Amino acid sequence: MGVTKMKTQFIILIVIAALGFMGVVSSAYVVDETEQVVVTQFNKVVGDPVTKPGLNFRIPFIQQPNYFLKNIQEWDGQPGQIPTLDKTYIWVDSFARWRIVDPIAFFETVTDRNLALSRLDDILNPAIRNAVTSNHLIETVRNSNREMTTLEEDVNMGGEMEVGDEIMDPSEYKIKTGREKLSREILKAAQPKLEKFGIELIDVKIKRVNYVQKVRDSVYGRMVAERNQVAEKIRSEGRGEAFRIEGDKEKDLKLIQSDAYRKAQEKKGKADAEATSIYANAFNKDPEYYSFTKALDVYQTSLDEKSKVVLSTNSEFLRYLKDFTSPSKK
Image: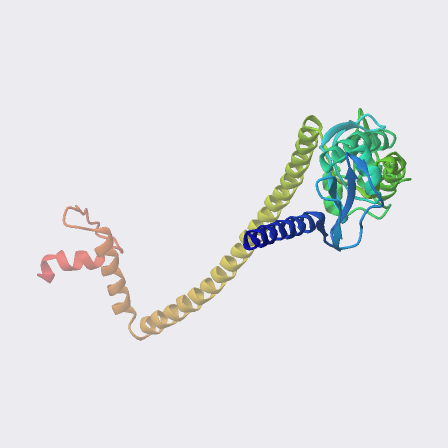
């Protein structure tokens, strides 16, 4: 009987120890460096928020830890079409950085991150729209009045920028606010509306600005037309240069040919003079033989086997032929 009682007491002690261990385990919760915790009891906040990392305890099954991120989080705005003060419709894409600084207020108002992002949409999108619609297009594009580069001038259609139904001259590019200051104004307008949610808005930036498709097509069309005009000008200058080079080539060629012809004629004249001198020397040595050979050359080129000759008794040109054909020479 005593042994049975001792066994029963031992089992009860084991059960109590197990329940105690389970109670201790279920009451403990860990907070890391990126988290902060709000403890609730029956959906009511109990005590101060836990913001330091470490091991903490709660009443098990009654109190519930609610975890929230402590580090910086992002908000990425939905790109939208917004008209500027000069009636130019543009696409604006923006982003922001925020964090939870009052987890109790955050829990009591928005509860979780998804609802917080929805509240950020409701507050930041109108603030960005109001800032863009209250300023000229140039204020959302540029940060300073520095001199534009060639690429920027090309984007602005060769020194002019279309705003609404008007064309802005480059002298009107001077900004008064600028993109950076515009972002600070958006931050200043939105931050007070987020304080009640326990949210601190750290920064808001306009990530990208672009024309709507209709204006973009017009801009690209004008850029292409301008580039084609520049290309045609370059091609025209190239053709003119080609004609000039061709003319110089023809001029140089004629000059070379003329000089070569002159030199050839000089050499030919010298050769003819030398040949004439040789012929003259030969003629002086035997005039009759020279006359005879020249006459034969003439006969050979002017007479053939079909030629018919009527000889005259006093023909000096055919006297050698006559001598050859006369009966006394046979």
